[in-house]
Length: 295
Image (cartoon, rainbow, N blue to C red; front, side, top):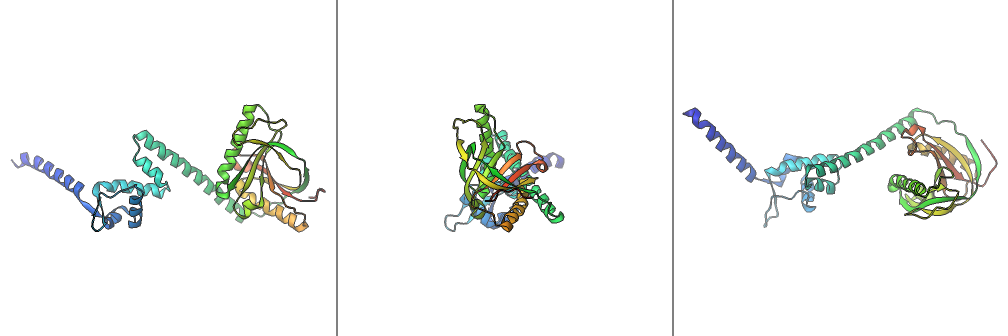
């Protein structure tokens, strides 16, 4: 008889325990300890509609949570540890199906992988800077004539620069391809002093062309002005360009030949050509008034 009644009794007890667990109210302090989310964070998540308490006392304003919300809070904390924005976490939690939820997660993972690549490049650059002596650099003087080019000119912040650079040249390349007009020289860009000094400035990304191209989107025909330039060739990733800038800048300053005007970069081998950063080649061109060849 004992054996015949134990199963049903145990089942009923478990059911009542589950109901009790679902009905329990957890004060925000206890909920914080259980989830490792601070009270400040929980209040913020409530304010932005990400994780709303199960109950708010009308008199005291105290927030109470349901035990069933613990798992949601744990998920939120883990994605915040991965720097997923709150808007994306909300969209993920409210996704209508698994495919939509996974699409949001995959997109964030790709951004994380991109950021990891940036971090690895910065570490590699720092190691190179600390462990290797500066490479000998050849600097030449060049008289550059006026260039007809298809260009995108926009005011850009330093924080936006990397994405803007890729987007601008992708659009320029696409416009030339659609117009069936080949480039007449390497991609280039103009950098005014304010982009370095104030972290915002009007940048020009351009591709030389021999014939005019019909305007499309942001791309417009323009003239890159003639200039006298001191030129140094940088081999390697963009993250190390400051070393070439430094060597070239010292060269110009020592000779007191610098003049006002944007610094130019000509991209001979770029991420569009190879993903191997060590193979990238960039000309850095400093405006000067002297044209005689020096090395």
